[in-house]
Length: 343
Ligand code: F6P
Image (cartoon, rainbow, N blue to C red):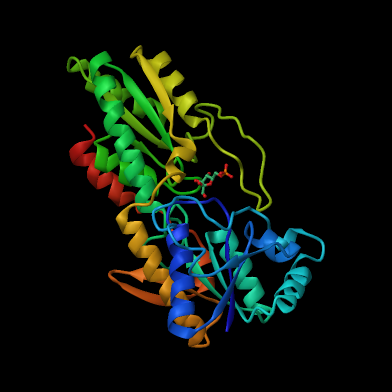
């Protein structure tokens, strides 16, 4: 079998271990040949390829990013895009694809599989918002990076008796904010799943700081929104999949908190730090298990499916189940913690 591999969407730690696992499993267990497509679906549409074999993958296990490059190209937004993709696959003699991506990349994989391409998906995104799997590659590392950062913010906030707002990624969902907020002992966790009321946030902070010297960390997901009309947040344009470019709620929040409570406030926006650098052991193992399972699925003749983690087992699920709706944070998770720890 000749297998094409691509990574699409925002990068994350763990992509290289996944590529390595696909390549090793395919070459060593099945005697397959492989080809890499550069920059996600752009490589398939524009026939941008790169050699891919066990030798090429040596040393990439601990490396962040992706040796294949990535982009947010959507073939279905390009004139003749899907047809050009099919031509490339035929011209390169590719029998099947492994697409490593989030909702957008795997949404394209699903459409191509319906058009007859054999494709298996591997779930990745630091946002952890893909349905039908417990965890996506990259999430664990992003949470650990955020926790390390918030631990550091705590000590400086304590020295100055300040509020520090820490903005983390999470466009539509607050998985990073929730997990990092709980693990690092934040005073407030704000997620896109539930619009926040700035008055109650400020009231909560005022109460904490009225008890004497006190520091508060507010963790806010970049996609968190205030209750309508309470504060104004700017927007920054859209990408090819129609997603808004975010970043800025943290600044607005810190200014509002200081203005309304009189407590000195600062902001730290973690941004792409959360997506860079070496993957945690958890992500390396997850990526390795996903990569080998994806190749097994191809050889079992499966298509239009994604490998997924359920508890401790790796299963295969329809791509439709993964991309039809986002996996959001159960608010009870935040509320249960809030009741005991956020005071
Ligand atoms: O990949 C998901 C994500 O990290 C989101 O959390 C974030 O909003 C977005 O990507 C940022 O995208 P870009 O790197 O294209 O600015």
